[in-house]
Image (cartoon, rainbow, N blue to C red; front, side):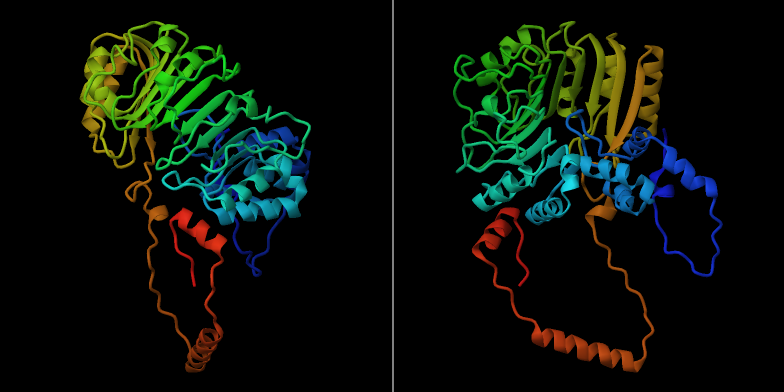
Length: 444
């Protein structure tokens, strides 16, 4: 249902001079709509576009900030959608959400996905871990979580208040991060999160083979991703013992990572994603084999540039994602399509400031029409100032305000009094530790 949230969720200050004519049927219709329908309506609000389907992603803030202003009949479903997935970027936001849930316990079961602050270039202080654990202890319905561990804490936290549960059996998605500077050993994920369906690892030092007879495999694991750590070879035997695994992903490597050869040879991998994997060599014969078992291949321009002549000749879907630092050359895509592969769907994602010209996009359309390939073109935000200048810059708007001389004198006196009474805040050691981890400075 294509709802435009900005038109019906926006709120304006009422004009007392304007007489509003209320439709008596409006409140009746809103009151009789089933909650399931309302949830579907609010679920159509825009969400962040990511390259994968895990996990849930929060509503876009620009569209969601006016949700609490909807009418009382719709407020419950709107709140449910707003709290379903929460992205916390600072420790202060984490503490604020914790206090909000303590004051309003009925909100606790609404939170199903939570993204906690990440600063993978620095080790997580113990005080931050305490704030994280205090929050997730309040979330009984949490089934997707992403957070950063501390190298001094080897145990994994318990989610929810039910102490009778062994581990966290309800969690299906886990994004677990360590520290890229001081990597530490992989924690006992198999015992703490035994029912995981998707696991995403970043910042762990895996330098020895993981023995599946010692470390129990995850029997329900379907998707597995590794960021920056060349550890697939050490996980090869363990991943082979995960019977439902069908998707693997390698992200952000400065050179071609070592592939899990045994796992790829089984033919069980249906989806392969190679994102931001720098290399001067082809991925054909290592990660990418000409096999009819692989159904979906998702790559970025660096992989395409070195492998395009030898990409699989039969795929259900090919996804090519442009990056801000490496433009996508459509001629390489067109040359590959003209070589005759059997592809059902082609998804090409450009960044908003892509240099690709319209003439090349037109030729891509023609090639896909000629080979009967369903083409989808998307535009994503890479996070730079050119993609979203409103969010990445704070323009200073100078306005002229007329003020009487008496008001100016009053304002000057008030400022001098406030400045005189203001005392410098001395940060506590805990506040200083958190500020150092977040890379910011405390306001004195």
